[in-house]
Image (cartoon, rainbow, N blue to C red; front, side, top):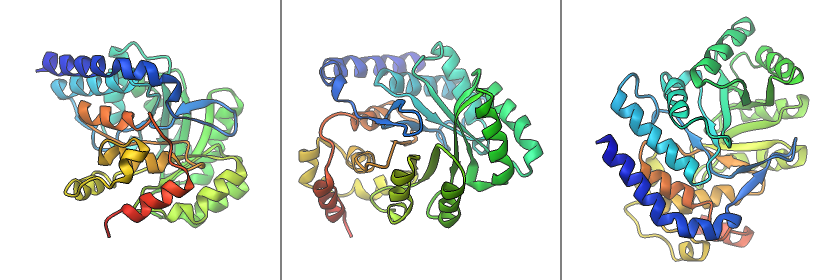
Length: 299
């Protein structure tokens, strides 16, 4: 079964490779404001989908999902200690793939008490098998003052590139905004999708003003948005923006926002990864098209 899955991934990638080669320069990338570094606008989340425990078959399958991700230009992978075995599964997959050089490793601190932060970070780094992380974030603002102090010290020592904070589904956005005002963070991670646009009222414009990168989580509402829309035909505007399916339609809306640096859909399937990464190619909706996308969403 593993060989068959791997063959399917290779076949799919081969079928896409001519188009990918032609469109490589058109793949949408975004700039991290604090450094000017560039990352692909679609990354990969690991909540639920990579939490497969010690099941060797499922771990090997997730390696093939990651292989597809990297082969299609992916870089940003996001995880958390909250996600149980996901970190170790990612680490094993990266080892099997010889740790692709384009990896942008993003994880979180999620533990009460600032004194517990460094130990958890070391455990997380060991699970990933990386020398250091590109981005560490205070997950859902747990003990955020103490953890930010630790992360800023790591950054000053050259042990970390970027510092961020996270929240989701509109929770504690007032506090996120205050942290953006008072602390020199590089990233925020919040929920943003066609159905959940609260962040666009204040946080996203403020991120542009402050030069703070934004990762959009829950692009599909953990699959619920896709499941609801799959019953309906794609709107006519999908052809104009180069979206071949609902996943690409939803992702193109997110990554076309000027404040969004990357979004992190999670998947356990190779075919879904191919669909997701396909949203990096083709037209990028402008403001007028984005408004039409909003209007095209079913009530």
